[in-house]
Image (cartoon, rainbow, N blue to C red; front, side, top):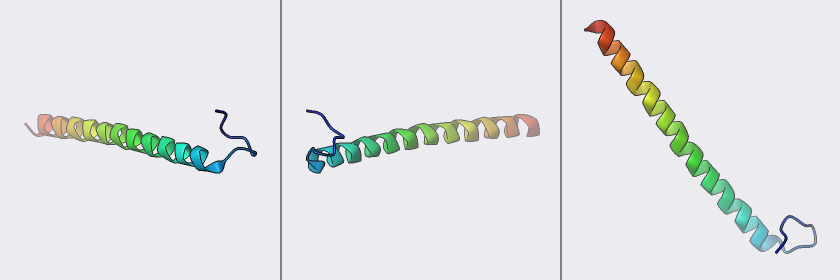
Length: 52
């Protein structure tokens, strides 16, 4: 099955693109959240290290 052609049926292609975007969004949120969490924990550790 070839997707992305103008002559093809838009149903399955649109659904596949939607699922792909949703998966990329979820993965991006997980990676971004992990990065923010790591930066937050590192900042907290450095802050407590300086105060102590």
